[in-house]
Image (cartoon, rainbow, N blue to C red; front, top):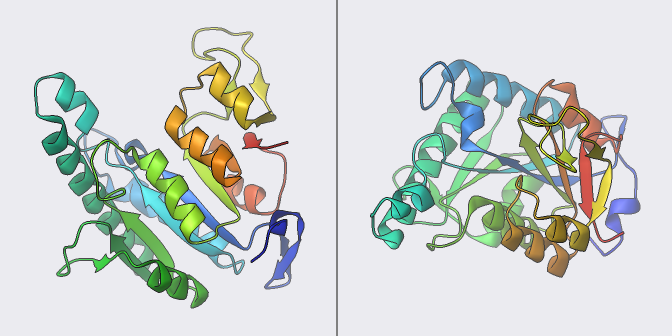
Length: 251
């Protein structure tokens, strides 16, 4: 895929979609609920959303966080050595990835879990060409263990992986509708942005994605759509290029 590919409209399964290959960034919190670190019912629900866009012929990769189980940065602030804390956090993302794989496959999707930390008994090692080949074969690819190195968030890992697999866009599914000019939970007059460029997003210090990840997006010219995970139609709307949430790109 070449530069300018985002402007092309792909037609897969007779349905027009704007993006052929996407990377979905899921926070670990989206898999939790009712006092559980991993809620199987919620995981199944999210898996069904992913399958819906996969059925449209879109090649889907996923990067999943681990915050529902363990947050390395938070633990390090409480006294744990940072590298150890981040390593535990990366292992938490593998747990979430396996849970998501289980749901996807029970619902009929072929998947592969690729880990940046070698653990061959439960996941394939991350190899760029292998990941791309899985996508070309229609498999949903789940990236786990971040970059395999401490000090990097899963947001940053998502941007790096998206660039490596030549994704058309990063779809960051959250619990908020998009990026606002101020906290919508505190201010009733908060306004959501339909669109921001990279520098505007960085200068505003938005919280929904970390600054390092945004900087990489700008460097790699990788657009990112930030939208509410629910309802399930939202993912379909994003891949079809409908206006939903906030899109951050160079324009």
